[in-house]
Amino acid sequence: MAKNWTNIYVDYAIHHITGTVHNWQPILLYQPILDIFYLEFNRLIIRWDIKLYAFIIMPEHFHLLAQNSTGDNVLKFLMGARRAVSGKARSLIEKNDKRLHDYYVKHEVNPESFYLKTAGKSEFRFWKEKPRVIPLTKPNHIKQKAEYIHNNPVRKGLCSSPENWEHSSYKCYYDQSLTGLPISKLQI
Image 1 (tube, rainbow, N blue to C red):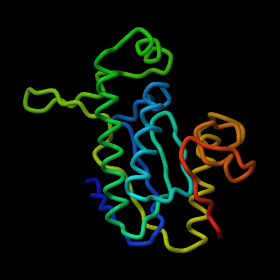
Image 2: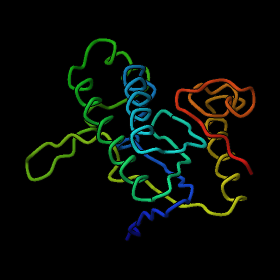
Image 3: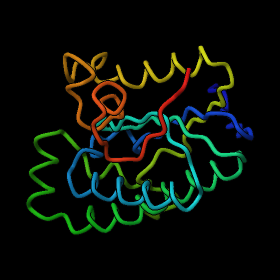
């Protein structure tokens, strides 16, 4: 039996957040959905006064290191961002234009995987049930997670070095480049 995961949100802690697309479908890098992701996450980072220390967007999941003075605001930010991305992504997916169809074929996306069938009904689901959220309070754990996040595409064989992955905060730390989301640099 699978162990149920309970997220914990802690005031002032930096939270390691992992969000996954339903059924691990590799669609987050489809440019219109990626644009929605950046737009909605940026909007809600401002709304909930979130400090973002690291991020990466992979084809089927994302990681963030996020903080606020109240853990409840981290929860509200995350819920709002996932809900907004899901609603707008659903509109794109249900239009199913040629460009999206070509993306499905090239990246082996199964559009039927976004629909959960229960009791004879079909329900759209963009995200896996809930994200994983782990509060971090020790500086060495925070640094370790930032390195883990930035090296994710290298471990997955998607690039040879973290600086080659476009959708990450890595470059902000190492060559002062701007990234798709506002980064507050870790002072560890």
